[in-house]
Figure 1 (cartoon, rainbow, N blue to C red):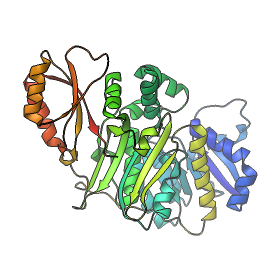
Figure 2: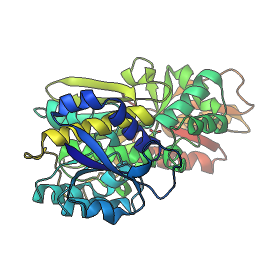
Figure 3: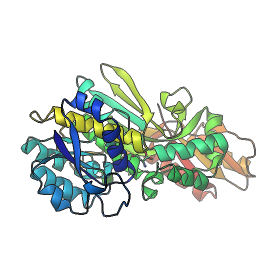
Figure 4: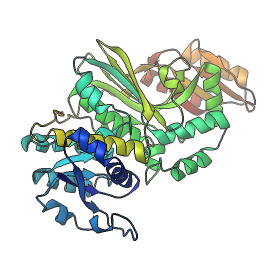
Length: 414
Ligand code: HSE
């Protein structure tokens, strides 16, 4: 029998305990050993819980118990998760986590400790909730050079955008609903400002390209500026607005990586990924596009990935699972302003005829977009492809001509 501890009894932690308890026989058959939860760490009290005797408020009890061979960290946040996970690995315990903040910030360091101590540090649930993606990239697609990864990596924002697109629901109402359903982070700013998706694309990029990409290196924009007008213009253009995390390897050895809302064409595989679902496209040089789809958030999907890691850990007590990437470097990420893109622009003017003449003079030919119920003086267009820094300079010129640029969204070539 293998004894484990679960640190954190929130949405995911309670799901892990539920899955391990309800599926114990099948899990034991697959792991070839019974798995028993010895401790559940949480500072809160859970009166009446059937797991009452397992609760502890003391991390040291877990750390100092040699019977505990695997620790599941599902507390979230960087501190004290990092200190706890590091201490567990140094004490000879394998760790399974769903904590993307931890892996995105400290993955290289923790993987190194795990390697040194011949332990497993597994984090399938940190990206894509219940979707298998870490293992496929590190194992099934290992023969490929990864050309690009692009994905809808945050369930909450995808849920919000879907409600805006389909039901014209306000941003606030859709967010409140996502929180009620348990999709959003404790602090939903991480979802709506894009940092959750950023952490996830950092993990995928680090894994696919073998070197740590830190969240601070990635230009990140969330969905808070998206208005129903943009959703309508996206439809007129022939697509939808999605929050995309994207990384590509460049010939100069750097990575092009970004998180931002994009217009993506209706024909794209990612365009029909709706609600709380995530979709991740991995383009391999041998496989071509491989797309992963499923529930990217929520109690049981995430718990399923965590428990699968625990099973894998039990099966690999004597042989470490080979997950590894090296430390990052400051110059590893290309400045996003050097990316060649085209951009959707929504603007307002007092004199539309003059404004359009100015747009043409500055940008050359553009694709005009229109929508029903456009406000007076509102106009929208999509630029041709050019370096983003050129677009930004041209937009400044437009502004200096009295045109008010209300929003811009990149066009995703997906
Ligand atoms: N808040 C996250 C999301 C949870 O909405 O995708 C899963 O990481």
